[in-house]
Length: 357
Image (cartoon, rainbow, N blue to C red):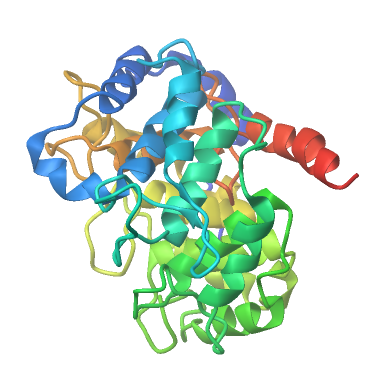
C-alpha cells in the first residue's frame, strides 16, 4: 500500500460519477469569460500591456467549458486578426508577439519600448490554436530562432530584450513556444535542463532561481518544462516532490508552507502531481469544497481567496484543476500546456504533421 495515498480520497472513477451531482455554476462561468473579452473593471487597467494573456485565459475558459466559439462576443476571425496585429517580426530584435498595442506609438517609426515578450508570445500562440487558426501567418522560423537570443549562458531565459530578470517562468514559456512550433532549434536543452535542476531545493521542489525558496508555481514550471523537453527522467526525486506537493493541501492548496490556500495552486500543484502520475493522491472532495468557496455565485468566475473578486487567471485555473480529475462538464486538459487535450491533438496530428512534410 502506498503510504502517501489518502485513503479517504475517492478514486478517479468515483469522481467521474459524483461530479455530475455538484453545483458549480458552469453556464455562469461561460458568461463571465465572454464578458472578460469585452470589458474589465477599471482596477485591472494595469494589465493593459498584457491584454493577450487576459484574452487567453478567457478563450481557454470558454473552450474547456465547451462554449467555444458559441459564447465568443466577437467573430472568431476578428479575434484571430487582433492577435496577429500583435505579432512583431524584425531583423534586428527578437520576433514574437506583444501583449497589446499600448506601446505602439507609430506605425512607421519604431518605439524603443515596443518589443515582444516571451509570455505574450506563448499565450498568443495558444489562443490561435484554441481558435482553430492554421498558423499560416505565424512566422514560425523567426520566432523559434529568436528564442536563442533570450537564453542566457546559465540556461535560463529573459522574457524580453529589455528585461534583467530570468527565472523558471520564462524557461517554461520558452519550452511551450518551442513545443507549439515544433522547433527546438532556439533552445539549448542541456543548459535549460541544468538550470532547472539547479533550482531544486532541499525539499526537492523548485524555486524560481537557484537558491530561492520552493514555490508551487515555479515547481510546476520546472516539471512541465522538463516534460515538454522529454527530460522529466533527468529529475531523480519525483517521489520526494510528490510528498512536498501533497503537503501543500489543507482544504485547497497553498504554494508554500504556512501560506493560505489559493485557488490557482489547485492547478499548479495538481498539474505537477498529474505530470508525476500521482493525481490520484489528491483529496478531491476537500479541494472541490475550497473551490466552491472561491466561486462567485453572482458574476461567475473564481477568486484567489473566498469572499474576494473573481479574475480571469484564477477563474480559468480553478476550472483547469477540476478538469484534471476528468470532471464530466469540462474538456480533458493537457497538464503541461494548460489547454484542452483535443486542441493539443489537433496541433500534433494536423499542424505538426503538415510542418514535418
